[in-house]
Length: 555
Image 1 (cartoon, one colour):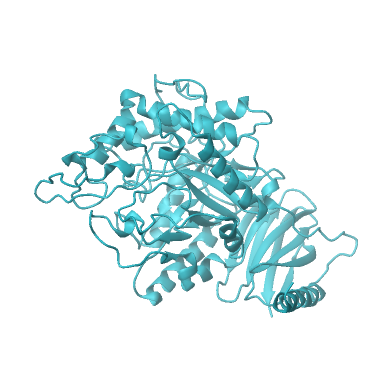
Image 2 (cartoon, rainbow, N blue to C red):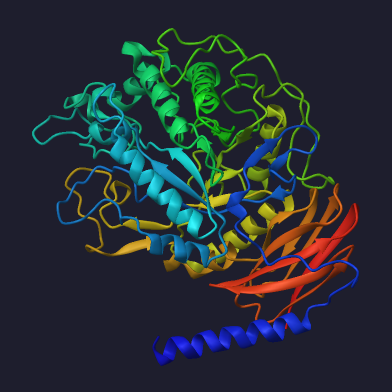
């Protein structure tokens, strides 16, 4: 060990001792809690109803906050000298953990899972499993996200293909394999404005919704294979069934009805695989609205689609599932949760979702890249209304701001963070690392991005967003969370809740800028702080049932 590292460890130990000495230890009769173990050892599940939330296997409320990671995705590469992704290593997870994150939304790609039709690439599943192990080592949950942008890599316009007036040769993106893509290599790949506005992209989505040629059935089987691999793993928080679904050619029907049918089939395949796997347990399914209706209070798909017992879904890990399903869209839900109520999360068991282990997972891009207008406050309110209709809580699978003015970004992210706390929900910032050669930086064939090989953008390059992402928050807390107030700049935190079991511990994160965290509160005792990379893990026991308050002050 060199002298620099020795001095750093001695300083960290000194800070820990001084902090522990400053923490109040209320109620000597109660044993102090053990310093936090691995949170990811606790399997998560969704709770529907008026107290909708994400909880662990001890019943504590859990907030999932972190980043998107695209290092395992297969993105179209336009320039040989500019990689489309930045790769992925254990060091990424160590640095993510140092921001206080307890979740990554890990992009996985159909084109790598099933590059040849009917054949699952076990090597790629091994790479996913390795990433999960890296995450586990750093106490980070993983949401496996079946990602796509503009359908897939094969929607690019090849050299020499003619584009009609007002059309431009398109780059490919990520998602589906070439064999599942329509009109490959033709003028139908030319785009007209936005990346999704090409005949090839929209036809591919339409074929998917109609299960033309069994395309959708193949992805359903892929989900069965993924779920079988991770069926017994508590570090996998759950599965995001499809990133930003496009409405296809039948807007209003594809996104409100047929998208729900796909979700129903995918959930059936996942539940079947979990049921057959040794020690398999149910994981959360995160479902997204269509990319167009996501900002609306009544998005597509309509409520009532989820669950293996609904409709006639028959998908499983080992079946062909080519018959489709007839998922119902007839339920509206009647949840009452709101930002001002005394419950954690949004929704009720009004029939919105038939599979109770489901979470609504839209992308919160108001005041950013949303196709519709609206403020951040309106976006959260509409999302809460939608979640109430589904009868579950919500999780912002993506959010971010890319204004040129850092002051504008700072204002927006401060308001976003306050809303996330007000609604007592989590989310994942887009994204951790974005390579120069990412097709989002290129868009049109032959365009050279204004960056160089090895140059990246992402969370670590944006100080205002990093401050908000790394703010203090409750990783888990007894019973129901009723309030969260955090100051991103200082690291202070106040959490209120209602405990339904005596003696459970709250597990809180505070950033390193909170140099000496001091814990106070009501109905709390035995507070301890453990220095970790980037900050502190603070625990405090809630000795009795009922209301409690725990606050972290920063000297």
